[in-house]
Image (cartoon, rainbow, N blue to C red; front, side):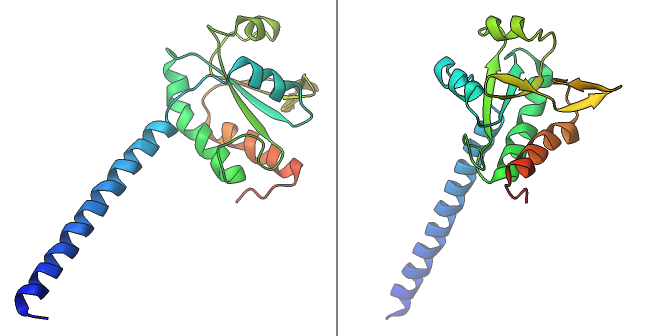
Length: 164
């Protein structure tokens, strides 16, 4: 191989590495956009998940809610870390996003007054997520990242999944 061919080969390698780096950055940015987006779960899928025997975490949100936008990254990371993939039903746990302006039936039925609010359902029934003063608590409304993470990790551990 001549010196000129070696030089062209090196230049091609450099260009290839630069292009690969740019692609990694682009796909990483697209992934971050997906991670921080709210997407309403379709009604049929939502009803199926809530009424199934698989525990389903429901996040009530509004697209105009700044707190919802602030915690969605935490929510999706907790889902990913809890059971390895942010899709439904891994380790027997499902996740549903309910847009409060579009899903007034659930909002009214469960007296959702603030977003974001989290509930857990199984077989169509709300499940207790804790207790306070001797009473079961069925909702968590707030933005505390550790509280949100614990919903996922505790539920996955109950279902027999590995949380880390």
